[in-house]
Image 1 (cartoon, one colour):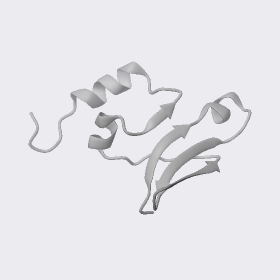
Image 2 (cartoon, helix red, strand yellow):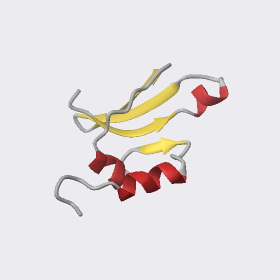
Image 3 (tube, rainbow, N blue to C red):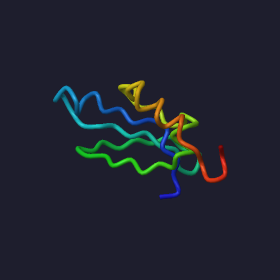
Length: 75
């Protein structure tokens, strides 16, 4: 809560070697947690801006769909 997620690395989860690692900034400090499951509920604006570094990167077709979506009033 009151934190900015900067990176979600799910390589360990995907290859079976470990957990997903989520890096975030809270009160100016960079912290990280490990989790077996991560649910991302970021706003469309955050996803379009690319402020969260997804590792591995999001498939190109998904990013294209996100980029083509419009925010309220954007056309």
